[in-house]
Length: 415
Image 1 (tube, rainbow, N blue to C red):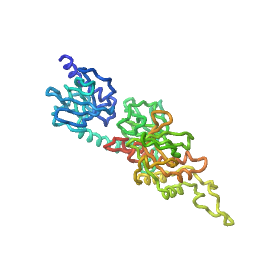
Image 2: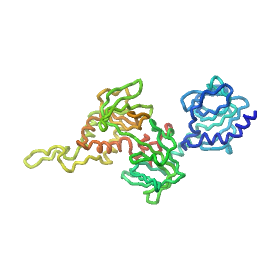
Image 3: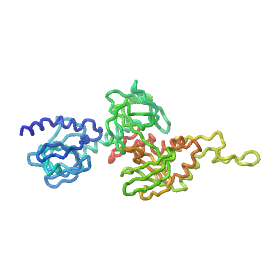
Image 4: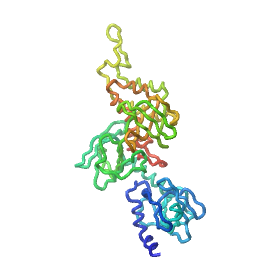
């Protein structure tokens, strides 16, 4: 009983530890993988309620495993609000008040080799409270947030300069940080905001995608950041070498690096296929001006494609956004719709191992688009396209675009 009383007295501290360092929209931080507990050992477990049968709960742990929890007549049950780090504002909770989707912290004695716990304390955050907090978070990110590509990082002053698309215009914004600014970093292989890990300033580099929220200056050219989430995203364009349905990955020969890349897919990855007619229309818009106009030279001879000095390798923001809109309107495809020889464009996170990546978006049927890039200028032209395809700052639905979803909790929306 002395040990139990001691643990109950320490519950406020345990909640603080469980919450510390977690994403602000996510209750109870992810529990570290615990070694298999000996029968009768006191354990702390964090998970989401998957099923309720009488006084027995099934929890899904962050590791993906399940835990059976027995609620006893003596179990102390409390409800706390999202973000609360002590029990000062906790309210009593009844077993019948628990619902599937609630997030709970269990403290009890282990049995069945660590697969079951007899709880003497349960602290819950209700699913409805989580949803409300997520909605509030999204509103605040939308109202007081901005996103874009990192242009420069000044460690001495703590200022990060980004380029962002605001009101259809590219704009430079200085993000000011302080020691109290919350920094998060997308996890390798994940584009979900809830998977973002605590980060450090030195991890942020030019070319990263960044979202920040805080207080804007009067002219909207600077922001004093209270929270930042950033990540490095990889752009891949090339030909599919192999498709492995069972492993949910494809191997692509990247045209820019001339190296094969294994691209993995998750349930959050988006796959689209461009009809050839659409791809050719987009390609015409991307070709150098002289190539599309075929202007007649004196004597009636057409000007050779690509001979104009006006040709530009870059794609305008308007064209990039048009491409982005076209991609969004396409119906989704599955990995088994891809075949060897398909030409694809991919926006991805860096994989956990060298030579691998995790797809955010993939567009198949991109051959005419890649061919349209001027010789020797393909990298810069594709980077411009990718700015619309996967890394724009303009309120799309994916993490790399700055989208937000109450169900997936990906990156917050941009201003």
